Amino acid sequence: MSHSGSSDSSESRPGRGDDPLDTAVWRLRSRGCWYDAAALLAPRAAADPAMALRRTALLTEQCVFTAGGWAAAEEALRTAEALALTDEERGTAACERGHLAYAATLFQVRDRADEARAALGRAAALLPPRSPARPLLDFRRGLCAQHLAHNPVGALAAFRRAHAGAAAHGDELLRSFTWRHLAALAEQSGDVHEARRGFTESLRIREELGFLVGIAPALAALAQVTDEPEAGRLRAEAARLVRLLGVPAWLAERLRRADAPGTTGTGPGVAGASGTGRTAAGTTGPSAAGAADAG
Image 1 (tube, helix red, strand yellow):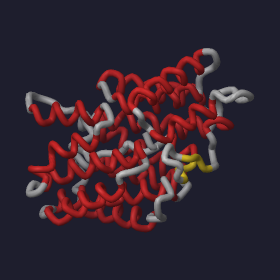
Image 2 (spheres, one colour):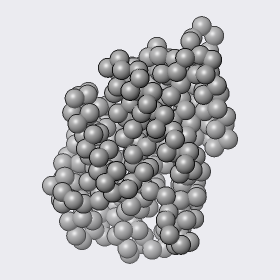
Image 3 (spheres, one colour):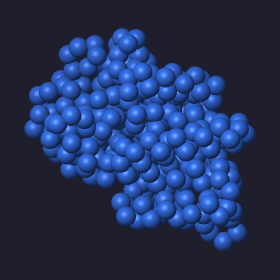
Image 4 (cartoon, one colour):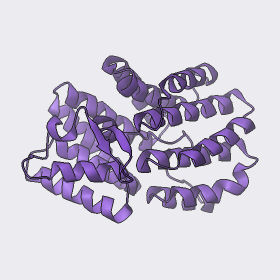
């Protein structure tokens, strides 16, 4: 699971232009060094609402990939909420509140599903229709529809809106997430060709952007709709990246189960349309399907 869909609209794209801070934050973030990236923003985040929201998004993304760091993300979010003055800022903060609550529910830290839905509804009321934050909001509402409400029809509509909005705003990283989730819904409906197309596009975008922490989940997802022996090669590359970066925590266990004796490594029996995994820390993790979509 996740982007996460795991960042705000300003933080869901790699750094552009010549701003050294943006470049440094992107490089750290893309390698899974969220705490260090957030530390670079901390001095300005203490008084600047936009920076506070970016810092919150980074720390929430860390939660999604590591299943830890919840207190730091909550503290950053409260700071961002206190600094928000405009409807745009308050709406974006509400979107972050909804996503953090969704992630805590997905990873079974605490059931915050009602809080997630309420916060995303508040964000929808505050953000103007043409806001650059709208596509990310649509995406996160799709996540809630898919994994909390178990409403694939509602999720599909939200992901399609997010996909179109991300394209309109030039947000390629968000498009990698929307491609991934549209592909997952296609796989669930039995459309393997469309699923393979979506997972391939998601992987391509992440490789082109250099979003290293997102490449292993993309490889593992593509393996689910790929025949052996190519599927095994994709899983092996995903496992190599997880060992190199140490994240996502939930993917390592999933890959071990996929390559265990007696499994084929593909299909819903391995990915797990239901059931509960274990995180690297030994705490209860999200369902396999939910975890797969977190990244």
